Image (tube, rainbow, N blue to C red; front, side):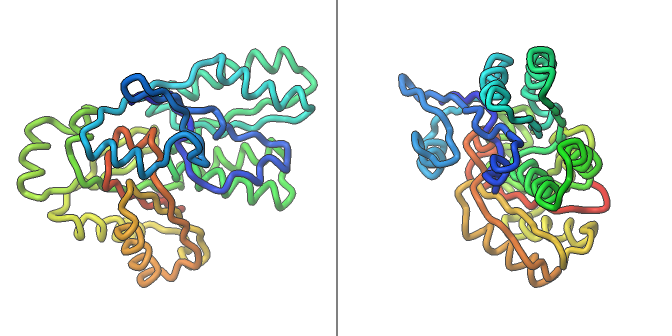
Length: 290
């Protein structure tokens, strides 16, 4: 399998189309499995996310590659030609070259369409962490913020967007160079699960370890309990790599401890899932610091 990223977030972004703000979830991810090529659409029209995880569990080797400048030119031009301005909230530059490609395209389009606004923000976020920042930015726009004010909101709050997650299979982190082969072998044998986060530079960092799956899930709630800002007023996102029961357990724990009024649960999409594997579980919220 092969994917060209950018559908790395699963969140409520449709509202952006109504306010002339194009967040490029529709910069598609190409993939192939053997001689099969497909696009990763949010509506799963070419491949079901559950099918993708089934392939991984069966031993399929998934790879990703970043979207290029031409892809952004095409996607953004479509909106600019309709007289719309563009705000692009991009996947972390610490994890992909996607944002760099978007900014090169944006610079060209600013010259081509001087009467239009083309704004880009490196969110330093990933997956539904990026999705949550998008959703929060939409709320600002709904309440009357200008496009520039919305971009500033995203920039000002991106380092408060906390990403905490764990994985069930260390093999996928080993393949991506996140852990050594020895660590993966020993950790798997002993049931050691990593607890990771995305740091202020947008990089994926291994922070601690937990013994057993349940303890690793509880560790995510522990991290939120330490740093969440007014959790009783927050909308929180949880993403999972085809392990819905674990996601629901985590949501129950977060509600019990912190009285969060709204929790949205969705899949880790194929682009991130190719690197983290089945059983990935992630918690995203606003905190005092990452």
